[in-house]
Amino acid sequence: MNPSHSGRLESPIGTIEVTVNEGGAVVSLSFVDEPLSESADIDGSCSRALRQLDEYFRGERRRFELPLEPEGTEFEHKVWSQVRRIPFGSTDSYGEIARRLGADSGSARAVGVANARNPIAIVIPCHRVIGADGDLTGYAGGLDRKKWLLDMESGQARLEF
Image 1 (cartoon, rainbow, N blue to C red):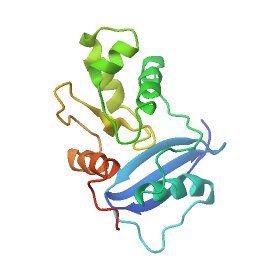
Image 2 (cartoon, helix red, strand yellow):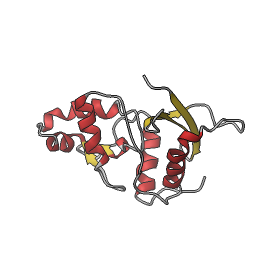
Image 3 (cartoon, one colour):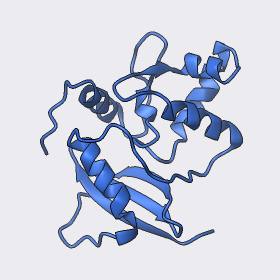
Image 4 (tube, rainbow, N blue to C red):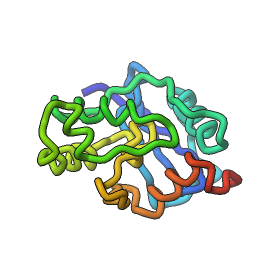
């Protein structure tokens, strides 16, 4: 296992922690409960990811240009690849992703499980996956964050923070 480095960013939806491996690829992005302290040590190896996240939250970035190395199964990687193709400001359903993977819409639950295991929130935009009926369904960061992210991407959320 490669050593990793972490950095944090205070965002409009809470503190976000980014972890990159020794090669500089993002391996995780998660929400943390404790706010960013003024004495927080920002690891320089995370600066590119933190800068792009900051630009995203300011409404200046719609697409991330970062090397990613999430840990997961082959199926999870296929799902995450499809999720990364969902355009900024758009949504897709679990069933539609299953169909694009060559499975029937009954595989939507498996897609949902893989989506829930996404270790790189926001950059792999699992918040853009919703239920077939348009309902917001589970999000590891909480439904309030999912709603905020979707509203921000559609121009309905305040961008100041």
